[in-house]
Structures are given as C-alpha cells and as structure tokens.
Image 1 (cartoon, one colour):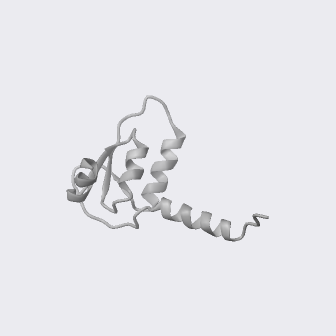
Image 2 (cartoon, rainbow, N blue to C red):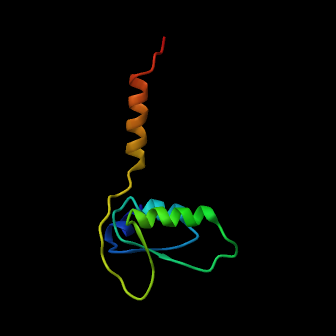
Image 3 (tube, rainbow, N blue to C red):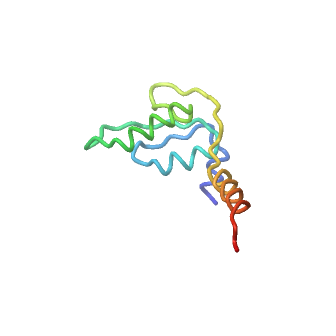
Length: 95
C-alpha cells in the first residue's frame, strides 16, 4: 500500500540498474523512469537487451545531471495476456 502511494505522489522514479523487476513495475505508472547505471561486475546481455528495449519504447533514460518529463504508453501486460487467453479460449474446442 505504501509503495502504491509513493508511486502516486512521485513525479519521477529513480531505479538502480540491477533491478529490472522494479523498472518493469514502475513502467506501469507512466511516469518518467531514470536508471542509475553502475559499472557491472560482468557483462550481462540480458540486462543490455532489456535496457535497449525500454529505451526504444521511451520508458527509461539514464540518470545524469538533470531531470525532464516525458510520456510513454504505460505497460499493462496483465491486460494484454488476459485478452490473449480469452481469445484463445473462445477458439478452443473443449469437447
């Protein structure tokens, strides 16, 4: 409940680069998300691809010296998945 309230009153969200789950969760708010990049201990292609995708969708930017506001389409994967499942069930023969 507290996390939801914090999201509601925030203008920006800052997340460390090691938490893709927090970035994904924050993307449901539609608020600007800044990622505090840190030097990795080892190269992780999964994280690199994740950041590239979210940057291409205009969801995240690297945290630097200034803040700006921008808009993007909120992620709503639960809705997309449930719509897909409903569609599949309509066409499924249960006999």
